Length: 483
Length: 89
Image (cartoon, rainbow over all chains, first blue to last red; front, side):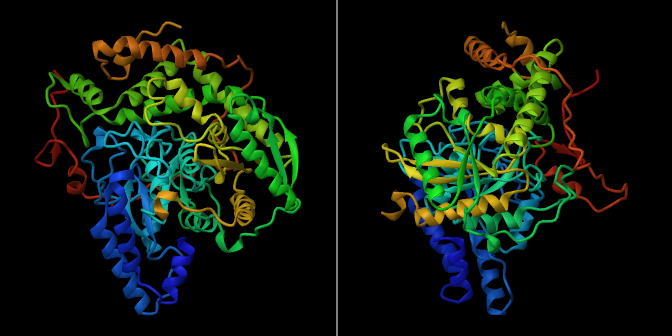
């Protein structure tokens, strides 16, 4: 069921908030062993909040569209008094004394936080396999990965273990798992959602965003979390209106840019065919296609790994065993404590990226790598700006393939990184992008399609995605849930 | 590109187990090789977005978190302070 339909039931008093939360908790009990979406399930707090919502309903209070709705929150987003681990040994016992801004907004909107979702360690990964605690499985086929780094956030929504969820996206970490798990995922415009309380990976690229089973649900959640925040100096000075109720499910006259670089050899033929077939369906509804080119796409992955690793090496310097988190047991002096804590507390992928970041920023290499990557970033942003003078949205596959098997790419970092080739340019340019399910592949797994817009064009993305949703007759849930 | 893994690890305050050094070295070199594909470019780059200037808050005292709350996560505390190995010899 969608949040919108559950909200309707609550309003009409056809069910209670406690009943909704209990039913989701039952689903978690049935499913968690097989899927493993959560690091922490917040049963007690969730029921308490649901009871509070029922009291408000009984008192005749007007409630938000998210009131009583069970939502999963990625475990790199701080929740006061609830374990927040970033799926890392480094924060295995970290209990934040404050809420992230997005969490405060969820609580103000009377949403029910049902649990903290599993992820790749410190958001570094594309498969949810680098989590220190567990590997989340794809609800469509547990032999396959759910995608990452917001693997748990996508899986819990796909498996009915939550109605909506929050993830974070630095290079595709909302859109990729959304596409692999057959759900809707939005990476908002950089600066539209506060990063206060989000454990930083790459500060100039990170954004928190919503995942759900319908465009309307995702729009509703976005509406609640977006907005200027004095606690985040990078949040845009901007007013936002309503989104969900303004969705206009039409693509008449919409110019859809098709960038040739996203339909080349790097993308599997079956994926290309499914996405282009979806474009045809949109054209039947009145859209036009425009061939465009984003020539620097080939360099995007390199620029992304340089910039994000450089920022990560700086952001993760704070994990030293001093004030919070893991501290090594045996050490001879302060420096030794730092080294042992970090070596024992971080997994291999995190270490790889910290070292890459240190390397590209180090004396003698800064100009050749980091400076060049920043110049490339500017070029990529310019190419998008030029493209948007010819079209309204840009449409691409979300990923070159469907989900892959567990363990298939863990031995080859470059192969793993290749999952991001369709998503990273969006973070580099700070643009919004939404992934929606568009087909089922021959291996039975979902195929995702990505729509990219200019900055702050989320409404247009909801409109186009909403139109496509109508064409599809809605996006379902994973078959394992129906059974 | 030859990467001095031990040096980089030291700069990052990390140590790599002896058995893993070779693997890490190879992986890093492959990743750096991918990154080397970036062509040389001209021109400046600015990280600052002129349409969204940073707004800093006023320098006023406001209520903040309490010390006890902040020390809750510290591995070792004593007399309201965090305990660490001796810093200055």
